[in-house]
Length: 261
Image (tube, rainbow, N blue to C red; front, side):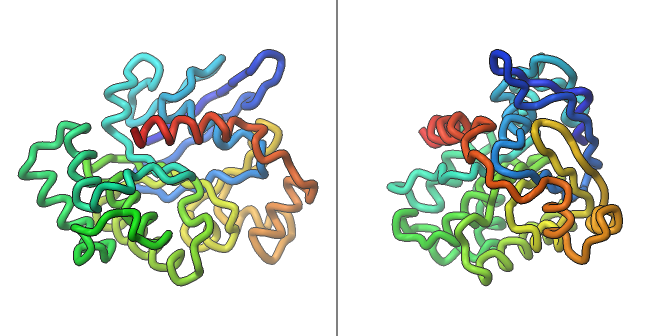
C-alpha cells in the first residue's frame, strides 16, 4: 500500500530525511517511531503531498504523490498532531463539511457519518459544538472525520498525545476494529512505546534521518536484547534529549491550521 525507496529531503545543507526505504502492506498497522527531530514529520509531509522529495520515490496505492497529488489525497485520511476541527461547528457539521470537501454524495456521507459517530461513541453529541467536547471526544471526532471518505490509508500523527489511559485505550479499540472490519491501512507515529508495541504489526525506527531498525516488536526486542519496546528504542536511538522542532513540526502545525480553515 505504501512503498518508499531511497527517500531524501534536504533543507539547504541539512538532510532531514536521508535515504529512507520501507514498505507498508495493505491492511497493516505500521508504526513509524523516532526521537524528536529524527525525520518523522518530514517523511509524513512527503507521504501526504505536503512536501516534495529531494530524491527518491514514493507510491501510495500505486500512485506517485508528486505527479498525482489529488488522486493520492482521496486515498488517505489524516489526523494531525494539533487540533484541526472547527470548534464553533457541531460534530455533525464538521463531518458534513469534510464530506463536501471530498465530494462524498450527500446520502452516503450522511449514512457514513452516522455509522462513524456511533462507532466512536459520539452520536448522542452530534449536535453539540466541538468547543464543548473533552480532549478525548475531539480526538475521536477527528479520526471519525478522517475516515468519512472511506480512505484506504489513515495517517495518525501522535493521535493519543495528552489523553488519559482510558481515552487512549478506547481510541485504539475503535481503530483496531476499523482496521479489521474495513481493512484500512494505519500509519502512525507515537511517543507511547507501550501502545506501539500493543497495536502495531511492524515498526520502523528513524533517527537522524535514517532508518536504524525495522521489524515486529518482538524482532526489535530480540535484536537489542531488550525486555520492552521502550528499552529497544533507547538502545537504538540513545537517551539524549532532542530538539522538538528540528524535523519540520512547525510546518506540520501550520499545515494543520490551513487544513482546519
